[in-house]
Image 1 (cartoon, helix red, strand yellow):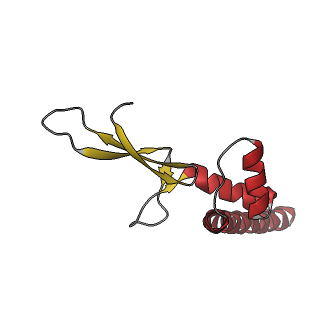
Image 2: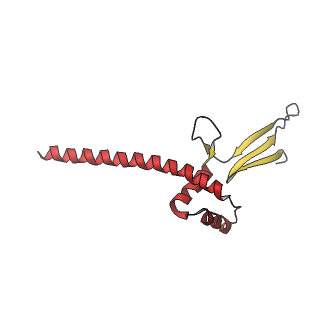
Image 3: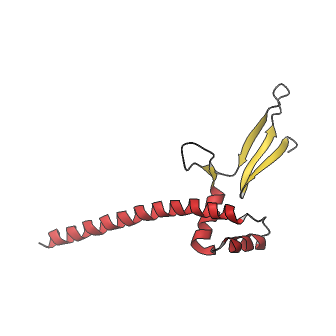
Length: 122
């Protein structure tokens, strides 16, 4: 790993700056460590691990202080409270989108089941 010349942390994941081994090139490339996804067409991608941490905060952990207490217990470096809140907001949007779609599907299924039972008994 002697080619790594820098790191850009992004929550629980980030990017490594790696120098190309080709002597004619020697260009520095930014390489992500961690799986990523895009929320929008443009802009930087989000790391899955950060969104998952935001989901955990939203669902069970509570305040950012509790998240950092949990990370401390695991001997993992802390995350600034405002960044944890951003992760939670991003996760909250995804949770709302999925739960709305799930509720709509359940309502349609219940309606169709009711209609099928009414007309099959007639």
